[in-house]
Image 1 (spheres, one colour):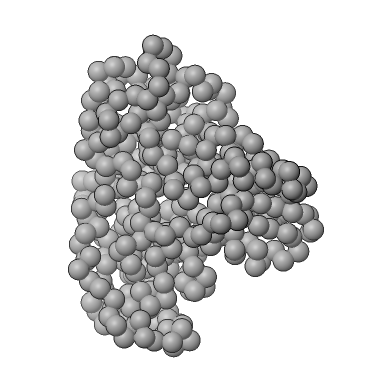
Image 2 (tube, rainbow, N blue to C red):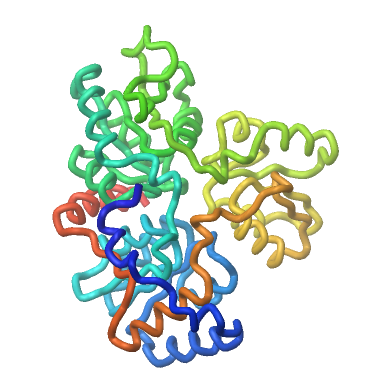
Length: 369
């Protein structure tokens, strides 16, 4: 479920007039407002956003890059975040009290982030402490709510991104014997495996049933406690896609995100963060053939930019992430118009206590960037 802070403003709905405006008129208005507000406005845009929105971004990047630029920009009065709710929360946490963060469409979310809520996490932590004692440190993927980031900060842990997960996991294991990895089991498993931790020393915690999944005879050997969460987009890249591709086009390189299952990551040629995927394609030789396992807006953009390469989605039936893909041109322009009128909508505000704890977790990560 969405954090309670995010419900403020959900009663604000897009006026009909914006739905009826022609795309060229919406774009013209967006450029006019950008010019009018100047440095008072800053627009970060995640790589997964639609082209119609990303063209107005002042900075584009993955979760780590956008967290960094948000932290560095202390001048803009308004930050219109073209991403999803957990990213906008992170921007609010890292920016000053004089700055207002706006999310153009409050429905823009992340199903993975919603797979770990505070009640579940508190219950899990109590049971894990009873089982393992004070031998656990929590890490959370930045694809998580401010509440979960605050929980991790409170208990000595840090946030991670797919770009720095290896560094952060090494750090965590230097602090405690075990890691509770929230909320994406696949990134946790793939990262730990890369660092030499065998699958036999990882166990999944099911927050719905409040119990471990799998054999529990050797619990003391466990180094990784993986939260049972996942990305619904990246789980849709399956072994059958790889088998079919290897059979039909053995010369096509397979490049996937580490949010994919362990089997898919292991069977692929390369895996890495969004930034890694972008750079890998950029550096690839002309004429090379690629199948990419990540969100379709990014794959389509790579296809458009790198016309000298043959790029397809690893899953030929893939569609863009429904929640990452929420922000469109009408919502974007509406949010800008409301700023100009002095009545900004969809403001994201994390309360002070939660924000301070979450910021601690994020700043621990920044030490290793």
